[in-house]
Amino acid sequence: MTPPFPTEHVLPPELVSDWEALSSRWQDGPLSEWLALLPEQFATGLSLARYGDLPRWRDALGALPPLPSADIQLTTARVGLSGTAPAETIDALYCALMGLHPWRKGPFELCGLHIDTEWRSDWKWDRLADAIAQLEGRRVLDAGCGNGYHCWRMLGAGAAEVIGIDPTPLFILQFKAVQHYLQQSGIHVLPMTLEAMPEHLPVFDTVFSMGVLYHRRDPMAHLMSLKHKLAPGGQLVLETLVIEGDDEALLKPNGRYARMGNVWQLPSPGLAARWLKEAGFSEIKIVDVGATSLEEQRRTPWMTFHSLEEFLEANDPTRTIEGFPAPRRAILTANLI
Image (cartoon, rainbow, N blue to C red; front, side, top):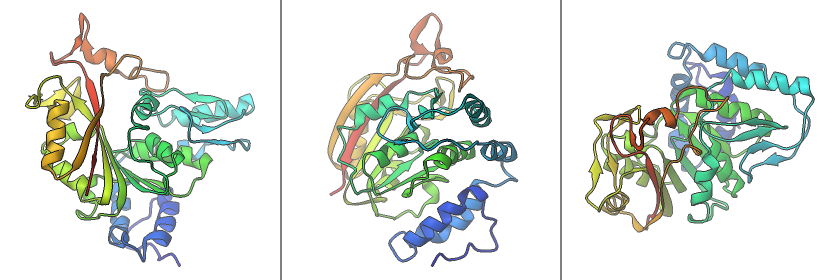
């Protein structure tokens, strides 16, 4: 029996199904401690008082038209539904989804409508998919998951349960727009930060942190928090901005890098590996390092604001607008004994 949502908190309508599903699955298990915190976290994460755009985004969700039955696509670059829909339905779908602009992670496709997101997030997935422990049957946490694109790919790879967390309400509602059509159990994107979770919750078989480490003033504290979410024998998948250099190389851009705020430390791949070792991980591997291209991150009709091209020096694309080395990203894996 699902426990009632506490009356002192207002349950955001988008999260009713999440509360019911998680309450049913978690109330008698190792995640019950986190379950007890969810009412307050849900109410805070989608608070109308804090986020004035919520009514507009909710209107967009409410305008989603019904789509014909179609096959669900979780293992292709474009997550979504196969098949086609009448032109007037696609027009209505386009208008509703554009109400959730900007779309940064993807791509998605719903009955022929291609949501061409700022990031080709499928390229990142392709770089890591064969380098990580198989996700079949695993419980997975994706910390800082954005709109959940990679969560869908994790579910498609066989994960038994995927929990994504992100504090940005727009991304939560973008996930809900896709879930409106895919209706998959065992996948949730919840409105909160990693720090809001119980500090010691060692129940996840795989933990992903992609695009988060450089936003932390204390990278070691972030790695330790991730470690405390892993079950014994679990794996961390870490993806981060890096710089070239030896195992001591570190760039501290003082909070701003490639026009991104809140960027504090960019290590070399070797230094990131050393941090993982110091945090107590083993079997550390650097599985990919490469520059971010203008084809992988770019402005599109679904993300019309400035993107990578505007973040680089016009006359020297090897440097950011601030004069730092242009973005490079690395993927590392590490295991917890």
